[in-house]
Amino acid sequence: MESATQQRCLDCALRPDRVFCDLPTNVLAALDTVKSTIICPRNMVLFREGQPAKGVFVLCEGRAKLSVCSESGKRLTLHIAVPGEVLGLSAALSGGPYEVSAELLDNAQVAMVKRKDLLGFLREHREACLHVVDLLSQDLHIAYDRVRSVGLGRTRRARATSL
Amino acid sequence: MLSPYGLDIIESCLTCKMRADRIFCDLPTTALQSFEAIKYATAYPKGAVLFVEGQAPRGIFVLCKGRVKLSICATDGKTLILKIAEPGEVLGLSATVSGKPYELTAETIDPCQVNFVKREDFLRFLKDNSDACFKVAEQLSDKYNNACHEVRSLGLSHSASEKLAKLLLEWSSKNGEAAKQEPRVKLALTHEEIAQMIGTSRETVTRLFADLKKRQIVQAKGSTLVIRNKMALKALATNN
Image 1 (cartoon, rainbow over the protein chains, first blue to last red):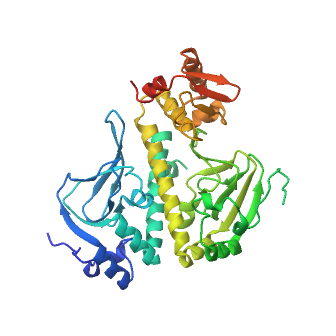
Image 2: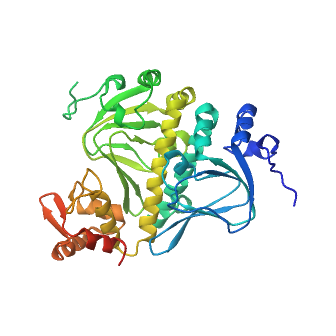
Image 3: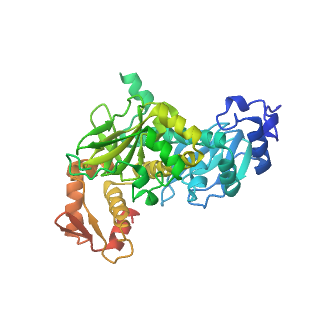
């Protein structure tokens, strides 16, 4: 299968459709210098809940399952991430451990940016920082929706249909 | 300036003595000056609703003084308290940034001072101030962490007693009580509100507290709860 994503973000045809990647050329060129592109097999765990945050993983191709786990090993899926999402963002920014585990559901292409490089990149490029704020807001909406469905047994969609 | 609710209102962020300790407020002087120009310092009594879940976002509310209850509600009236926000937190942030409706309802549980900033002004402020943008990202990260914690607690705890034990341990780890043999917890919430924090009924919370007291795991001293047997509470929290 031919891929529309590329090793270099500057050459990627899909970036206008992706919140994080739709950046001005000079910012993308800077991103290209701090990221490393990796091809990962299905079922690979990108990071585990509780691990210190090493960096972020931009999902270029493939999907990833984000889940939380109890002490007894019981697992709850929080979200299925799709291409264009940035995984591990909040932990990388706060410097705390990853809040969730991320496991690939497909063979995937992932761009990894180390925490230190990400922080430097965001401080240098305000546009990228604004995109990150947008992404975090979206992540938070998803998480609150999950809280709602787990805690009250409903989702926004369910509520809308009940009106 | 004194307000009708007995609050000493801090009019200017530039002269606020507490800003160094607060994630969002600890901004460079130039950014703070820009913030000063767009914010409205307001005071609310206890029980005031700042915004309601589902409402279109008007802007952000920086909590300067007092505490705010953040909750979600089902159509049948069942309420779940997600968090008690403390001074320094920015409320309504993700909705204001994304333009989607407020995800939560925010209600003051003390008289509060709140700095309100309109959505358009706030988005412009973020575009012009990278330091503020970074602080907002940090706040959102913190809120995401809290939401994941909530999902874990609600979705993966086996019983109400496990959830209550986790909540008490969480509260007891604050205010320098963590290292103490018998930490103290100031119970600022009613049994009804505690029930709404762990997704159970008021009756269950009352029964669980009675059981914890009977087993001498906790002891009530007025509105303060002393955790007499931390190990037993930890065992309950881990469902052992």
